[in-house]
Image 1: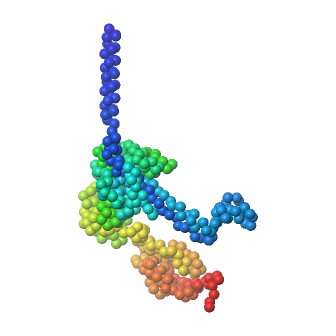
Image 2: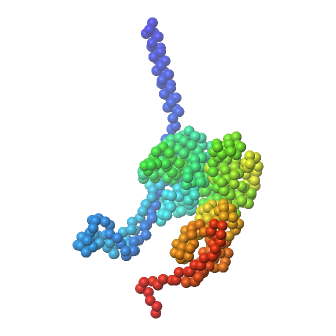
Image 3: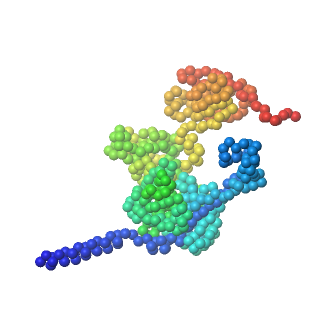
Amino acid sequence: MRKIFVYPLLVAGLTIGLFSGILQARSLPEFTELVEKYGPAVVNISTTAKKEPNTSKEKKLPQVIPNLPEDGPFNEFFRRFFEDEENAPYLNEIPSTSLGSGFIISADGYIVTNNHVIEDSDEIIVRLTDRREFTAELIGADQRTDLALLKLNATDLPFVKLGSSNDLKVGEWVLAIGSPFGFEYSATAGIVSAKGRSLPSDSYVPFIQTDVAINPGNSGGPLFNLDGEVVGINSQIYSRTGGFMGLSFAIPVDVMKNIIDQLRESGKVSRGWLGVLIQDVTRELAESFGMQKPQGALVAKVLPNSPAATAGFQVGDIIIEFNGKKIDHSSDLPPIVGITPLDTVATTKIIRAGKEQSLQVTIAELPPEEDLQKNITGQAKSSRNKLGLTLENLDDNQRKEIDLAEGGVLVKAVEGVAEEAGVRADDIVLMMANTMIKDVAQSEEIIASLQPGQAVPILIKRGGSQLFLALKMPKEEKKEGSKKE
């Protein structure tokens, strides 16, 4: 009887195990057709950039042998070897190279890659899987999103199909094809680990995080979903060794589409600008603001002369919705504002003093990085001027502290004739050469107009008092070896 029952159980167990194995095998993705169909549209990109020729006559010997006598015979040998005057200018003309990936998005030869792959290059070489080689034209690049658009002089090229990164789900299988470490046409697979990742150096890209093995050389290559659609552009890795550690980041294809359309049309990118500095709403902050849960982007500063300032935004406002799109984290806001067309009147929902209300804001163009940083800090740093002063504009908080409504510039550092005259760091310069000072730019213009040896009265505010000091412009120094005729 035992044998009669044992055999059916054994057969049943084997059947269940086999069936389970079949189900497990069927649940794993199959990438072969995807690679065969769209792999030829993935390209290898290499660049060259010549270094500047070394024309300097002042050359330093490498320390091959320490304490080598200057007039010894070995010193002369090494001098000839390393510092041949006829050959030295050409030693630095060996071209530097970079290597990355890209993918063709149209049959007429448009290619997408990362900006850092082609940045500062003299020549861009694109190699296809069929071993054809082209010199690519750079149509345009955008440093803020790390994207670049290239063009080949060719037709009937294989190209990829673009999907939607918004439809991508965490846990979904994805495939990367590229040239890691220079190995052409390599495919690696993994899953989507997270969406909307904000990295410290990239405010305008809500990255897709994956565990796909991405290494140097994969930059600019496509990230496919199981339908063979490009959903991202592999861009960055998190690594302490320079190699793959399970944290890879891709630019969403929906961000790419907007950038590439602008680059193709005008060769440059325009972004929407709101003009606020924001931070996340923590649980403690949410409680202090009377919110039921942490959400939105907390306005820490409203930049002067910005769309937000014109629309009436205030420090302490919490932006929970922008133009119909919910803002759960502060990192959600910059990409949404960035892709908003210029001059759009956007409805923004905020929480102010515990109550929800709406503001209408007209989106302007994001200023250049240098101007933006000046606007953000409220300071325009000057280089050291002839008086030895390093000056900065005052922001609103500083003006409140010193009870100064307008005008004046802050002394950040002092040396030279200004220090000798008694000017100190943290003094406020109110007047210079009998002219009231509005900002750093005006003070620099005044200083530039002063003559060597000219005495200059300046009025400064120090603590609760004001006093005049006399500075004297330094006289021009005679250059050695020069003489008057």
